[in-house]
Image (cartoon, rainbow, N blue to C red; front, side, top):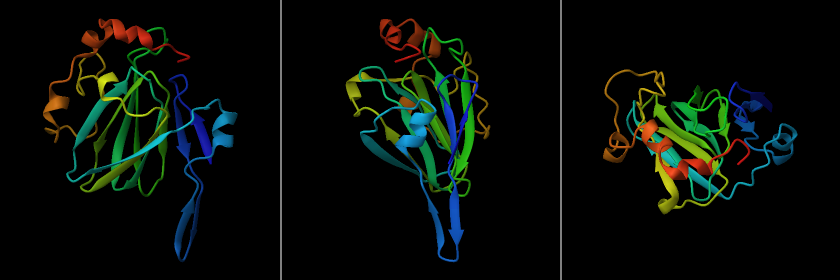
Length: 190
């Protein structure tokens, strides 16, 4: 597998090697030893699986401040635009984002450590996104930032009105999160 660093500190794009034959394919999606070689030492404790029935569904931007978690995201059916936003106040890339088109075909993955808000936009109907996380889900410790916040200015690929939950529509703005004392919990080396 090829693990590429990005301009955001500690964020990586993972390009697994796909072994194809007449039966289909085989791919390693996670290897602790190869991840450790580039500095990813998270221990993943939970796997999550999301199905979005409609193209242009947006989920996120989510993060967890009480038991911060890293995420390793991949698409196993369809395609999606995966996003990670740096919300670590002491980071030189604070407030910056990276987006990646991942699909069941290209098998790309996006890894972002704790201190990042993550989300995605589906590019096809019936898209499934799976992700590993390094902390158990804590609903009382979860935060969210408005998906289309102007201060972050994510360039979502589909411009029409998204399929989105009321929770995501009414999420706090980035500046509102930054003024929350809990935002100080995230550090570059969390």
